[in-house]
Image (cartoon, rainbow, N blue to C red; front, side):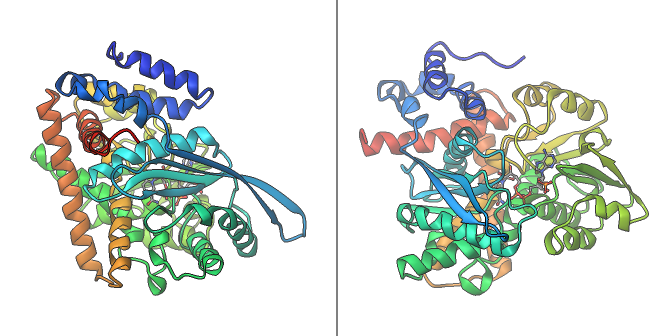
Length: 449
Ligand code: NDP
């Protein structure tokens, strides 16, 4: 059973459904936040008077545009791209670009909405936005990806700026794509404006530890949750979904802290390696060769491959969903709990369905929702903007130390807020309310804009 809505919030949610038809992921993200805000309206009635919640649910600006490009055989291809500039009460819009065939307005809006609260939780001066395209980089040549990125930026650049809107990567957008996007921005604007994109390469304005930040940050958050329970990652068996940027660096940090990672996946299937995932091999296959996870099992005798399978059937103590939205259902959650899982930290955005979250909360296991647990990526992007603004470049260790402090603070804020609102240890309540309060107070202070 998923919780009901407060009587003041139900009409707001109904309005969101009516105004945004068919955008199911956006509806889900809004509902999940509204479910926790009832007590906030009791404590701060001014938020209702000023319609702060209604305003937060409506993006400040939405941009949809055509991206024409030519493939290697000279054929014209057309994609659609989006940038949703959701909320700039705390700073310039900040949030990644996703390239995946499933991208449509509802996905971009769910991600942008989550981003508002996540960015607020970091305590840094960044608003919330998100973008992307239904372009599929899989199977495309470097030249095709470059032509697509150049065409996309030819329209997007006019909406960006280091004080306006600062995109980064997400699914399907890594160093290669950020490079082509930045190159085209620089060429059109005739400005070397490093702070206009984050996730850049080290040689041209990127931050050390940005590649690692989301995965590492998720593990730092997990560590804090376990610490509250007098426990640690040492010796724990973990499974991780996905094998992209977030998954790989969550695996790396979890291993460094003594965990044993026994499974990971991609959208075709999962590999199980009871000897422990060989991180070097995984990086070689996924980062260097850009091949499928199946290849891991072909090259490693101790591994088995489950075509079409998921990692959630593998018995473990810690589960790390690091792939995509709604990838972990109530049924998966029940299996995980039954098989002894004691903690879940979401590296991905909204990977657990509402019913799945309820299973974890009812079982009393440590559950770190994405908007808190994966905030390390955007936090380190904000640190990259800070370095760009001061034309500085920090060491890896210093940047990682700042990331760790930020994640510890986010954990503390969520935990203390959950206590204050009578739901101790419920990080869903803590993250939603703490993020909302920071944005809500700023919006109220800025007047009706
Ligand atoms: P990548 O594109 O680097 O990796 C995504 C991974 O997830 C790939 O291995 C992909 O496999 C896999 N995947 C996608 N769909 C499924 C599925 N249905 N089942 C199993 N695996 C699947 O993206 P990121 O690692 O950057 O992003 C992963 C998640 O983390 C997303 O939810 C993103 O929004 C979130 N996130 C990312 C941040 C970042 O800094 N990159 C910051 C905060 C959140 P395949 O190759 O087969 O598609």
